[in-house]
Length: 283
Image 1 (cartoon, one colour):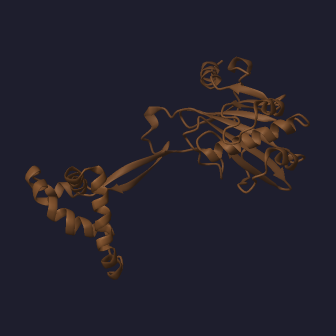
Image 2 (cartoon, rainbow, N blue to C red):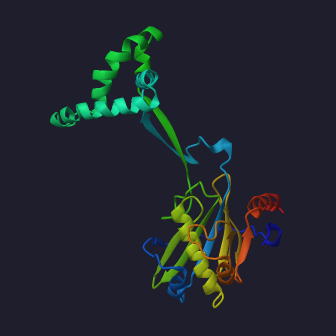
Image 3 (cartoon, rainbow, N blue to C red):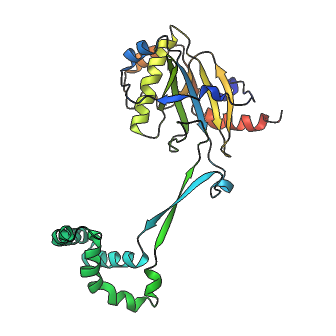
């Protein structure tokens, strides 16, 4: 299925599809058992295409959560660089390991009042390299000032508990089903081996189930401004043709049989879907 075969709808996102969910991480059934388990549980899939955040928002608190983490001072960096210069990379690691062994007992006896690394910095590296550093730099105090690195985590403005996503994946696949008065969700994708395994296992299971009872699918776009848009809903299982079978290998004949009747969205269509959505938004 290509982007041009999908009639894009410009409608408010139906958040009822994504609310009141509970993570289900203990379900490790193989695809055949999983298909039986999901029968009569009204399963459906949600695929959210993840657009790249517009650069103008990457530093805005409204779009990213910024946290500051301490990092090594420039002075301590210079001490470590001097160690590597003297011993070489491999031998410097060996030397540092010997110093760790040398001061570990003292560190324990003094109740771990400071980091074990501090003993090495103060008693081995500073006496060895401090003078040379002072000769190269006039303002040692400035070199010793604390430094921080800023981490920016993009907001994923979806209902709890699906408010975080692995941004290494270009899409977010959610597999949702109902049991009694509760709705459960499992997450697939391509960002990690675990996500790829879950993705493949659920797609094969739902593909098999879809041949007996239609499994609806819903396609969304999380755009470059952190807004969620619903592109289309399908009466039958429709998922990205990407990483299916990864970390859950089946032979090609078996895969084809399981996915008979499943609509596959070509990977190349993701970019085109985003373009078509933007180009038709005001029509």
